[in-house]
Image (tube, rainbow, N blue to C red; front, side):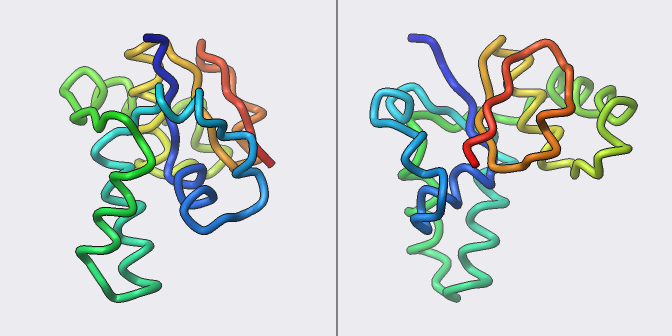
Length: 128
């Protein structure tokens, strides 16, 4: 299975039926994984919006086929990425997503336009 990584913005686009969701096809979603950091980010944003933690948790998990732990190696990669991402304002959650994609050598999907400027060794697909 060739995994693909979804960042929080892509997962939220799908959950909330926002522009760009159509690019996250069923085939792609069958292979989609996310970092525990990004699942927490999605759930947090959904809880803020709906105040229902359980429903928000289920929604966050329903988007991906697997949730990958944020490992020591990924923490190092995320820390190292600050040198190439700081000028674009990427958060720790963003860098955690990229770290997972780099560790898996997998493409990443996002809605964040600024990610088009990044050159971190993996394909980045901006869905809107």
